[in-house]
Length: 524
Picture 1 (cartoon, rainbow, N blue to C red):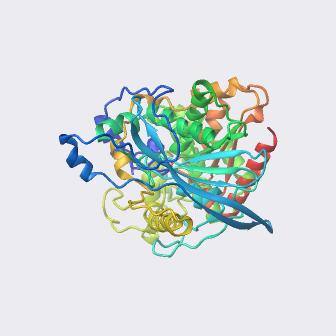
Picture 2 (spheres, rainbow, N blue to C red):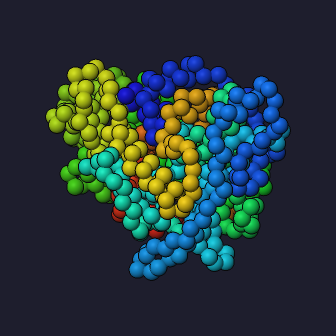
Picture 3 (tube, rainbow, N blue to C red):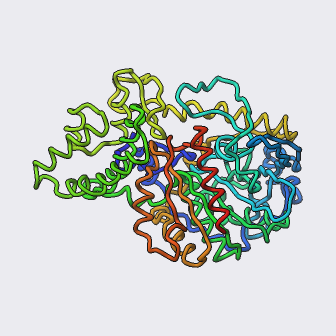
């Protein structure tokens, strides 16, 4: 793992890659100069296959190598029982073609929608992160009508996925549309890699074409008058405010609210860990939360004391540095008590807990590693004597197989969308080819501020798991507290739940999130 203060430097698939790998990529990445206008990357309807221009001699081999077209959209009627009441809905799986500035199909975005009959229903769009993650995590893990268990301690990658009615679904109060960005799920680019990078794999172009997918889905389905919401997880949480602002200011579609789950919101907080206390302030509360949970002492009241100490005495002591040895020693003792870690480990770290080192240290006696997404979820360390962690993250290693199996089976067998293609729940190719440009460093807080200022009724809910070290909740707390109050101070709220990065894998946290979102939507 990389340095603890850089724990949010990259979100691989709603999910995180190690910092050293990111730095290697960032050092090589070129800043792409693609700015897709309102007319570029237009979506014109459910895909019936790619454009097929007349053959030319130089194109014949390329045509032979082309993938078969994606099938037309398919629909199926389903039902669940939620809170003891039956709920009928229609599932639609299909691809929307995305066109370049010349009107040629450049890619296909696969969308899974769940719609309930009825007038005046809101619609919520959901996207995961990465870059490189499909939306299956939010679909089958968080808010879709069917739930698959994954990502918790003891879950096995080889267990067959089992669907159950999701008591945490949002479908009874909003229709749901899950978007798989290009290169994830069954979504794909239909242009060479150099064009793919320009059109789809850079910060701004990513926001522009995903915004157009939302816009055109609304037009295609006659839903522009509906109340509209957006949900984004991790890097999808970075996308969220930017999509919100782009839709609002450029495409003329104003969203009513945004829910950001474990968002990668403010990259600047990760920098200058040798001088700034911020990176260490973000991780200490999440590490403490994991220890409190292990002792069955994790409560909002206990965490309020942790946050108060972090923002007060801890930050002050870090800023003092060696000028106050007594305060530094007291801080090290306090951090040891809060985290339950070995006193020598805390002493030698100076009370500044490196994320990677912590995840190897916290379960070392059992020969296990903790996950950066929830350090209470573990796996055996196959390389315990290596100087740095060489094994995959415990959660990452266990979730791809069950979710891929579940999604492909659902699309092809349940819905009947017969597709001849590979499904990418996590695409390393997308992440490897992504342009980690300077625009990423700005984060999405400026867009969030502007969107909130422009619409006095807009509401934003930022949701985190206490134990998440990849996108720690304290980063969002500090970010929101620095925003000006624009009308009702509760319009931008941060909520924490038991669990980690994907806290919604826990039934109680998923249901609690559902309740908070229902309340948010009722206020508009």
